[in-house]
Every structure is written in C-alpha cells, then in structure tokens.
Amino acid sequence: MQAKSLIAALFAITTATSAFAQSTAPAGNGQPLTRAQVTAEYIRARNAGEIATSEVDYPKTPATATSQVTREQVMAEFYAARKAGLIPQTEADFDVAQTTKHVVK
Image 1: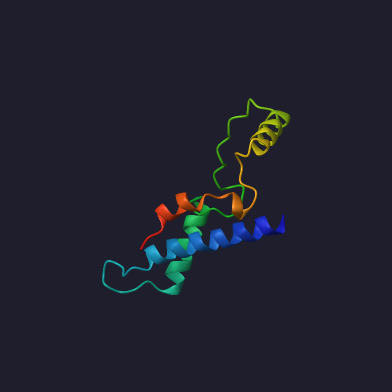
Image 2: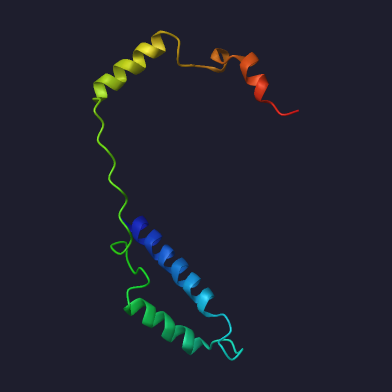
C-alpha cells in the first residue's frame, strides 16, 4: 500500500511540476512569475480540482472482458502443445536457420 501512495505522490509532484512549468512562462509583461504567484496558482488549481492529489482522483483503469476459458482448459492446451513439441523448451529447440533471416548485417 505504501508503494501505491509513494507512486501517487510522485505522480502528483510530476503533474504539479508540469503545471508549474507551463505557468512559469513569462507573464504578459515579459516578467517571470514570482514564487508567491506560482504558489498561489498551484493552490488555485489544486482547490479547483485540476491537480490530482491522491490515487482516488486518478482515472480508473478500464474493465477487461472476462475470459470464457477456464484455467484447467488453458493448462490442458498448454500441456498438449508442449507434448506435441510446439513450445520450445531450450535453446536447442529454436530453429537457427529461421532466426538468421532477422539478423541485420
């Protein structure tokens, strides 16, 4: 859980840094923003919900479709393919003649 929190914090810092980089461009009068102006802009953006502050704010990953095949069916198919010699086990099982076509000279 701590790793997720750390990753979320680092992402929030990166996002905030990105927002700062965009807002630190010289103001309309050609002067760079002051630290106080940048801090005020960050607080405004955070309060407006424009910056994610925790992992709850991040978009959820899309749901994946559930498999129609059981684990036992997958394992049975794997064992049958391995028994038929369709799955390489060692380096000796690889066809060297086929792999030399892909070597850049």
